[in-house]
Length: 91
Image 1 (spheres, rainbow, N blue to C red):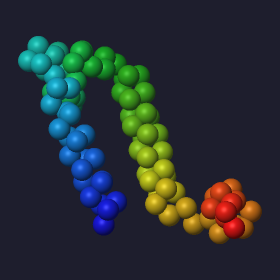
Image 2 (cartoon, rainbow, N blue to C red):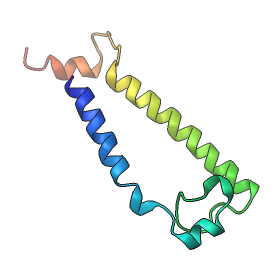
Image 3 (tube, rainbow, N blue to C red):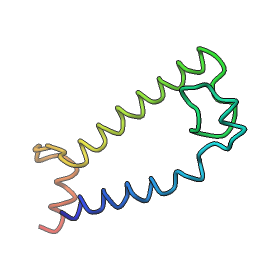
């Protein structure tokens, strides 16, 4: 239950910080329709920019999902694993 509360609180804090990062009126006009009102600046200008952006989005998403998965349930049962050395140090 504590982890769920921390997760919800973290999400709210992150969402509260989004409003200053949104684009101003001039930047909204200069950005492509897909990315309108997301950030300041001109946005991607070519196909290569979109390939780089979406590749980074996919890579970061996979990394985040795997990090959360292995932090929540590491499923390591090997007795020689470093986790067990640290946990059993006092015994």
